[in-house]
Image 1: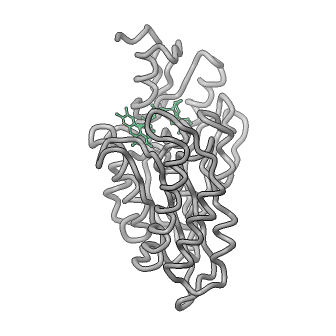
Image 2: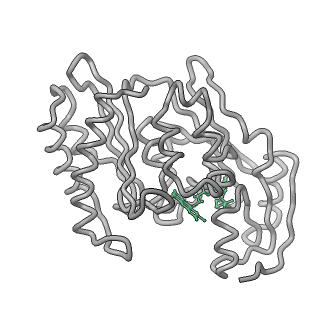
Length: 289
Ligand SMILES: Cc1cc2nc3c(=O)[nH]c(=O)nc-3n(C[C@H](O)[C@H](O)[C@H](O)COP(=O)(O)OP(=O)(O)OC[C@H]3O[C@@H](n4cnc5c(N)ncnc54)[C@H](O)[C@@H]3O)c2cc1C
């Protein structure tokens, strides 16, 4: 499998990268870590004539805590950099744990958080936990910039709201009220496998009572899915295993899984039930945030 010919640009800034994407239109694509795009080019699924490299841009490489705002993560930060970030380990360990469950060490060394989101693959590991923590996304284009809740970015499998000349530049996990969060991934191997089901949960506890909760499901619908009926069941109730089991049953009814080579729809639904219960228990009992 050889790569087809392409031209390669290494802009000095996000602005220049967006100008290049705008100038060359659909024949140009951004490349960050290349762990997805290069595989697709080798398989002849994609054939961009021009690649615009963005993974090296310092603007996209930061992880910083801004008091009153939250943790800002540049889109070019790799999964290993997320996993090893002291700031994230202290503030949102669940995000580090999600990054650790991705792929293998080689892919985590190259693959970026921006690439993981822009791909919009239903089984992707980072969207559920970031949505559970109410993350926003900054999108910059050649003519405008905008900020959106991450959950509004996905339109369908491999489809986002990004326009051709737009790049994700940063994610902000806001200084929020969640007292605990977690991401549990169920794959067919202990490591290096895509999610059959991924469940993220975040909770805001007041003593033993759940004031607020989010449950976000991955790999069981065309886009990452908030299980809102299950979330509503939890609000204002005393935390208990029975309540979490009930939430799991409701979440399994809310998801829209498909049957594929990795699992049947029925099996995925049942794993949503099991992993929702486990994720809620972990978020409440081990509270990482
Ligand atoms: C062996 C293997 C195992 C994998 N396992 C997993 C796994 O367990 N879980 C999982 O979620 N994924 C997995 N992946 C998928 C992939 O590695 C990740 O999604 C990775 O985060 C992609 O990031 P990247 O920087 O390499 O993206 P790239 O390949 O560089 O780009 C992917 C797409 O995103 C676009 N893009 C990249 N950055 C931006 C940006 N900032 N703004 C706008 N568009 C952008 C590119 O134009 C391209 O269309 C795996 C891949 C491989 C090869």
